[in-house]
Image 1 (tube, one colour):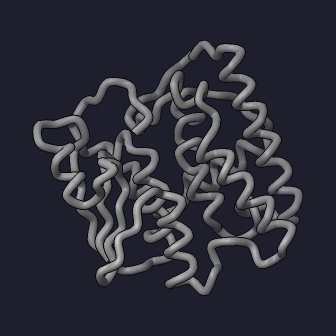
Image 2 (tube, helix red, strand yellow; image 1 turned 135 degrees about the horizontal axis):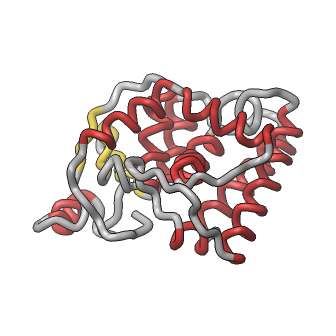
Length: 213
């Protein structure tokens, strides 16, 4: 498999797909394209005519969009382990991922992912706080349904990959969370794959204007 991604520091969508592959120790090569640099748009379109990353290439199959890639990985390589086996929890997980995929625009705009950024006393607007409150509710529901103090639905799942950029954002912008939710963030940040991604982000030098990339 070959995964086409953007910058480690900024590309939240790339993180989701990369994390699924890396956490489950699947073999893949990474092609990194520094976003918004001369020729980068043409490079990406050579893999994905939509002009977006990430893109997964696998034995003649091309999959684009992070959620589609995560589902493809789960179905093709993980015997559907990417979703909880319990139907009710699986439905909740899929719904929460879909909400992440299409929502939380205020948080994305005001708090773009930047792994090298650590902000003290960040001012949270009403709209951003509403997004944080909604995410907190989803996480509490997921953790209560899992009946464990591990990941959102027990074992690591697509939901954890989808919300990993939120963990990075909340941490980097110094958002205070209730103890049980902060503990979840700490468990995510402690994952070897997340630590590896953060290390790779620190090694980059490109600077991008604030974008949801």
